[in-house]
Image (cartoon, rainbow, N blue to C red; front, top):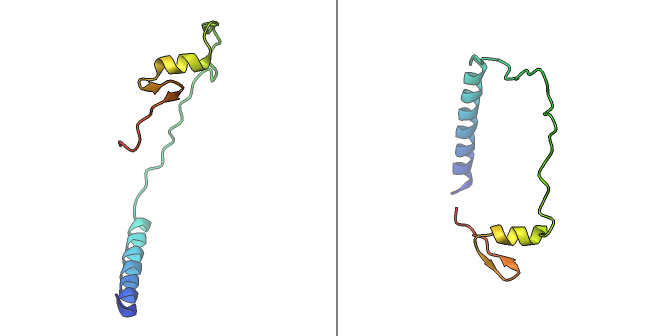
Length: 80
């Protein structure tokens, strides 16, 4: 691409953006609030379960990990 082609693309892009912004000026936007009103805004505290005192976090984490190798959790990488 030479400089004249780049300038032409820039002009076309500016024209498209200007046209789009003018169209947005005429758009009617419905403004409504999405607040939820409640009588109380805090939850009531209850007695929680006591954690298993015989196990520490590390042991519980390794029990829950589907793939592990001694001291390491094997996690998936870039599968999404």
